Length: 418
Image (tube, rainbow, N blue to C red; front, side):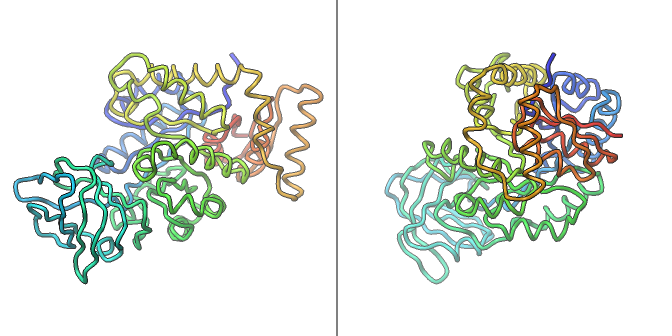
């Protein structure tokens, strides 16, 4: 069977972390695993990391791992009675406080958010189920009108698509988790709620060269600076969960295409994530819309597609991987896919290395060679060739297992440690 070019990422969880299950997932097609630091204790992550490396050794193929940090998820505080009812057109007060809220009073333990709000700002609560608009700005509190009402429970999430919040992308918990993930030997750190390039630079100062950085794009402010964020990161993720809350639904596909094209132009790996085969958390087969969603990401040139709950807590993790593998292969068997990849590609940078990579693809196409071999210590040479999307694929020969594992996330690259 021909090698698959678009890679598959699977999130670890109770449904997938048994050693025997890991072996079947790698066999089914997983190239890289995600450790979700929003859930689970350190002992869980250490056990899963050890199990991945054991399964990797048995499979005889490099497998990537990245730690996904929780990030500064903003939430409402507690309520007397555990919840409040918000009705359409009600006026509510928003304060920065750790005390419980009550009737038409929302308190948040985030003074930086409350202080940043201005009249006209929109607040989306509980993944967008409820919506408020700020109508008055006081010295220590705000008034807001209820646009979409409902029940608001303790500690539900808050999204502010209209405002860049002056907070770091790294909380104290993230910093501790980051240090621990580096001890475990992960290949990448995924940075949540990136708002601007400085968030990535701050993380780089802590990580150095010990791991790559995946910038998760899930806020409009990040989209506004996508070129610079892609430039300073090692990879990016189209994180459609929170991005889908912050943006109108009709804008999410447009944002996805923009992020993929920007990352491809820069030669940085790009992952499309969230709700790809969501129905397979319970069902044995995906919906046709989900199959089309995965296929669209592949047609657009994504380096990898990711399973979240499907592999972490789903009833059919191996089937989800196998079906994702089949969808990708079906797209890669389509001649229109190969015809569209060069059309959607921007010219490489005017550098010797990029010119050589483009020439390698042209030569491979003309003479019909089976594969392009790139010797690489850091992974850069293989990534540059993969940017050109050669039909022959790329073998990355490297003396370093760390490099081989990082390349597990890159389109078309099969790594071999020499």
